[in-house]
Length: 190
Image (cartoon, rainbow, N blue to C red):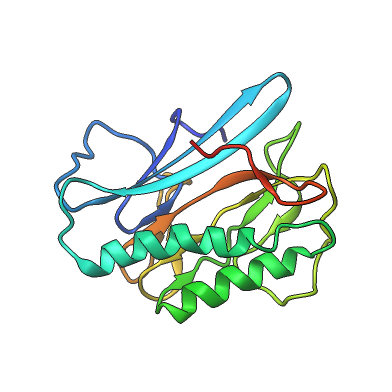
């Protein structure tokens, strides 16, 4: 089944794959994550960002959004030639849990290129030194999906939207990365 929207727009406890709707009226303090893809010249790109609408109502929500974004950059430190996927995964997990939040386990980052989802999978948890070795020319998406409470999730009846089971807010941050001979290159950072 094809996604019924042109962008994923996930609000508050909707972790990923929220379907935009005219009925979903945002209010000040809501958290909204946008996840979008681009297909150009035969290749895919993928990125996600989370924002607080207007003025935040909660220091925890502010921390959640910031920790999710920073966990991406913690993982990025390991997106280098010769390292393994597990090095990225472990860095994300350690940073998120150290800050009191949970990572989504059922969904993950991924390889990307001519297809939207390619190998390797890039989980947000794992053991350092495990998984596929990173080589120059690989493109991957690192995408922490973080829940303020427990990591348990539910899928809504729409067949797409994933929510936190305990109703706590969530955040999502993603970029497409090119592994190079030296430092990784972020292809979707604006």
